[in-house]
Image (cartoon, rainbow, N blue to C red; front, top):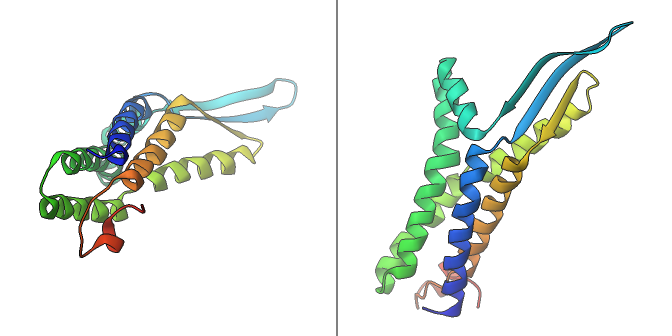
Length: 173
């Protein structure tokens, strides 16, 4: 295995280590309150959620489509992508490696993980500008963000040798 693929292997493992707390740790707290004369600020609603608890809440509220989309793009796709990347690293035949890498390349186009992170960040920044809504990012957000960045780095380090499609799918030398 080349040094680039060893680095890619380590990055894939580190990304999976970051994914776990990124899914289970709280990512965002939203606090809705009101400023009432004499009484001061009163919190009307406070909600702290992780990705997993958000999926459970959406399912319990029968919002199945959104729950499924978050489940699929934040959990299923990242795990499938990591498994396929690990398979690419350990398969010896170049044509088979290239086929699987193409699948990962296609999955990457549909991956919503980075979009989800950006969405959380936008929600955080947008609600922080309202005096009645406070938003606080938690560690889960940063772990999930780290997962996204590290998994993208792993793909960039991977060396998939294919003489015909060298420029199309292999990492830059």
